[in-house]
Length: 220
Length: 167
Image (cartoon, rainbow over all chains, first blue to last red; front, side, top):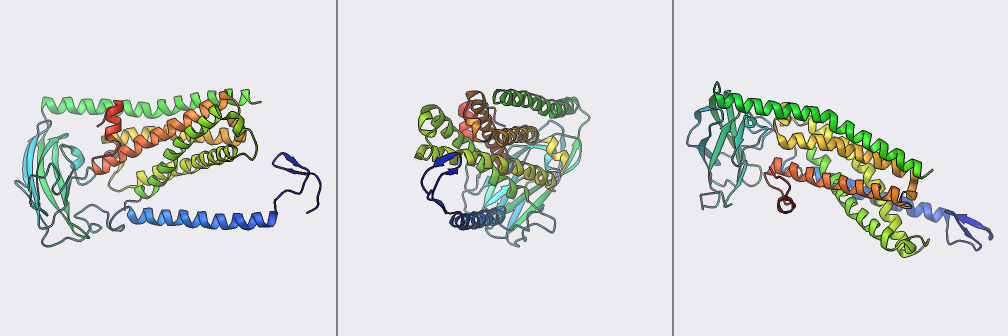
C-alpha cells in the first residue's frame, strides 16, 4: 500500500492507515463463521427445548402423544356429565403413581367450549389438595360456553416420556336465556375484533406513512 | 407438531433487547452528543454498534414475526376457530400485524437514512419511540403466549403493577 492521502469512511488520512484489506476479509470470515455457528447452535437448542420429545407433541389420545405409562393413573368423580350453558359444574380430578402435572389444554378435543378455572396444576402446588408426592387432586370448575355433545380431555404426565389422558363426555343443553346471552356477547366481540383486524392495521399504516413522509421531507 | 415455539422465542428476545439498546442510544445521543460525534472515540464506537444491532434486530424481528405468524396458523392444536374463540389469541394476532408494520417502517427508514437517522430529533425520536413500542408489544405478546400455554407468566406482576388488564 502506497503512502499518501487515503480516504476511509469519509475521513482523510495523510499517513498510511492501519488497515489491511486482506487481513480484514480474513477476520470477517472468521467472525461470520463464529456468528453463524452460534446462531445454528441457538436454533438447534431452541428446537430441542420446544418439547421434552419434539416429535410427540400431538394431542394425547392420538398417535403423536407421549407413551402411556401403565401405572400412571387419572380418574374423575364422573366421566359423563349433563350441563347447561353458562352454569358451572365441578369435576374432582385425581392423578397418581408419579403424576407431576394435570393440564386441560384449550385446543384439545372440545376443551375450548368451556371456561376452565385452572388449566395447569403441578404436583404439590397450592391448588393440589393431595400432599403425597406423585399424586395430584384438584377440583376443576367448568362453565359450558356452547350447547352440544362435547368431550373434555384432561392430561396428566410424570417425568420422562410418560403421560396419559382422560376423556369426559359432557352433554350441554343450551336453549336457555343464558345461552343466548352468552353467544350474542361472544359474537359481538368477535365481530368487533374482525372489524379491528382491518381498521387498526390500516390506521397504523396510514400513520406510519405520514410519519415516514415527514421524516424523509425533513432529511432532504 | 409444535413448531411455533421454535420460531417465536429467538426474535422476541432480540427485539426486547433492541428496545433496551435503543434506550442506551437515546441516552448517548442526548447526554453525550459531542462524544458520539467524535470519530474513533469509545462512545462513538459503542453508539455505532448499538445502532447496527437495532437495525439488524429489526430485520430479524420482521422476518421472525412472519415466520411466527405462518407457523402459528399451522399449529394443529390451534385451528382458526380456536384462535378466534380465545381473547388472548385475538389480541396476539391483531397486534402482531401492527408490530410487523412498525418494524417494516423502521427498516425502511433506517435503510434510507443510514445512521443519519440519529442526527435530527425529528427522526431519532420517532425511530427510537417506535423501537420501544415494538419491543413493548413483543414482550406483551410473548407473555400472553406464555399465559395461553402455561397459564402463567413472569410478566404478570409487572403488568399488575402497571395496571394492564390481565386475563
